[in-house]
Amino acid sequence: MPPELLAERLSRVQSEIADASRAANRDPVSVTTIVVTKFHPASLVRDLASLGVRDFGESRHQEAQAKVAELADLDATWNFVGQLQSKKARQVKAYANVLHSVDRESLVDALGDGGEVRDAFIQVNLTGEEHRGGVLPTNLDALVERVAASTGLRLIGLMTVAPLHGEARAAFARLRELSERVRETVPGASALSMGMSGDFREAILEGATHLRIGTAITGNRPIQG
Image (cartoon, rainbow, N blue to C red):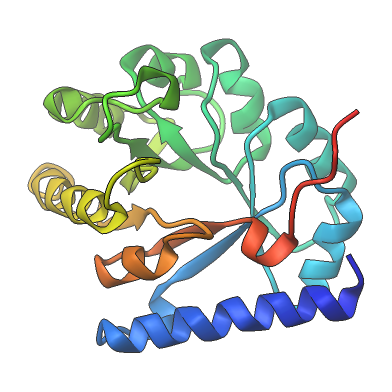
């Protein structure tokens, strides 16, 4: 993507985020925009970094590992936003600063207590579709306790993906309600990772602190061979 077009798209999204924040009586600074760069080359990440972006999201381990290594000179925060395999957990933890998809006790165990402490979101499944990942709300309390007891993870909040069919804002409101319950156990776990390119305005209105935005900024993913 030409740098000038990338800058234009980024500016447009930032303006929309600011408008939505004001509509929610919130300071736009309270919202972190994670630009999801999976399937895009390292050169695009560099272009985004030159425009002031510091938070990037990846969801495929092999691609992310190589990209982070290539861009080690950047002052960047790397967010792993995809489903995380237990067998790859420690490798991902080695380079990802924030993990957005902790969703089962076996994964907490796989991430282990060794190495650096990583910020973590618990992913909540509000659709009942198993392939989308996430812990069911009925099992959330037990997982919160497990993550809180880990010395290798710092629970900072909850994450969800809005249903493909249904009202996104209703799902975000539900996550906010669950967050209030979680904070009774872990007071500092107040962050909400929710909202993507098509629904980030609704997410901001329901209190999102972290948005995961890809195509609205980066355009369509390159065709994979």
